[in-house]
Image (cartoon, rainbow, N blue to C red; front, side, top):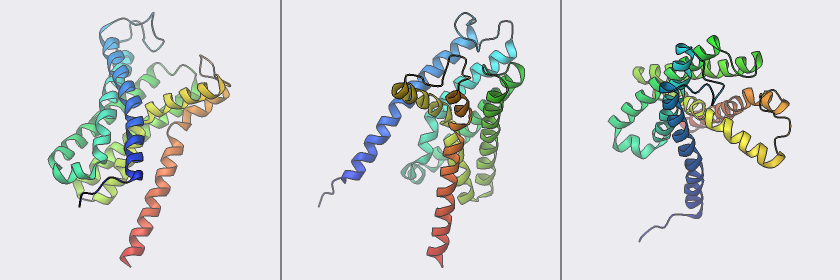
Length: 226
């Protein structure tokens, strides 16, 4: 008898498609903008370009290019079917995501150290912490995979996935907020109350929720074994 997908399965696929569209759109924009910044003078177009500043420009625009690539590749690592059928592809893609994430984190940290963010010390702190956590998650995911400790590798890989998606979440938060409030408590300099919350809110709450899920899953697994 042919089995038809359940309603929840269809809703799940619809949800994935709705997330995939903005992700691919943002990744394409970041890739295109990053490549332009690496080859052109964008000082009249964006504040992040540093005139006569090859180091911060290389750091921030390579950060955008590699971040876009990591964002597109990272969701592939979540597919259990892909891992089972193509383990070599899973490992190769995983190493690529890890290396790109390391470069993205280092590029962002270098830019913050040399140039700083648009909104000053508090935003510097929030985004530097984001970069440090991404770098740690990438190193740990690779470390435990090489050791064959796959449960711990998976936990760190999920943390890395959340952080890789952080740039998209940052912009989705703003899109939703401006749609609902017309930009209440926000300004172009990103110094308003909402902006200051956003320095940390695009990644920390999601990491906390993930951590709760990981720990609950571990307890459930232990209970089932017992």
